[in-house]
Length: 204
Image (cartoon, rainbow, N blue to C red; front, side, top):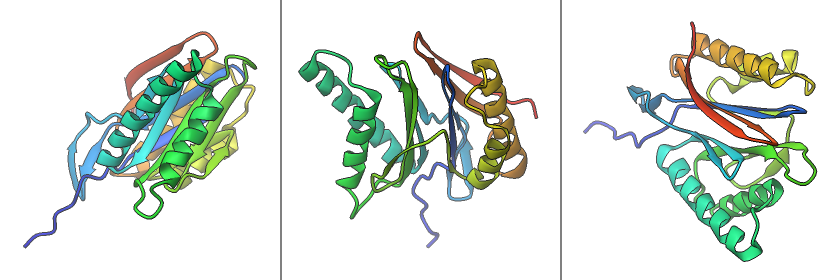
């Protein structure tokens, strides 16, 4: 009998924090074991001007985004205002920690611009709920390659345009070096005024 591979999202999620806002990017290719099933995946989400990025198991990240959407709506009703990025990151951390003995197989990024302080914030979370504030973060395949590019070129004073160019360059490096990578990526740019989502085909 051949081995059954439950869906794994061989994805890459990258995020950077800039003075003007935050930028998230994620690959769209979905793989089951060594078989590429398509490029219609989605692992970058924007809810109430808060960005989320996930890298990991397909069903786990889909279940997790449903849970955090429910939590955000519940908190909004309870508080009569949108929840802060800090509270959502910690709420997500608690959700992950509550399943630590049978964890969600996913790494997460939560980012946005705080509506009160106007400060850009980026949190990275591991499968058991550790919440760490970062300037930049990468999870998934090729994360070591991508982290090297970011370490060399990252500066919080980059403009949104320059930050987008840096993100695209890191995704191109991954696409050239890893067979699981994808030329199609989802991109989210969040500033204090708006959130922009787009799907881009890399020129490689």
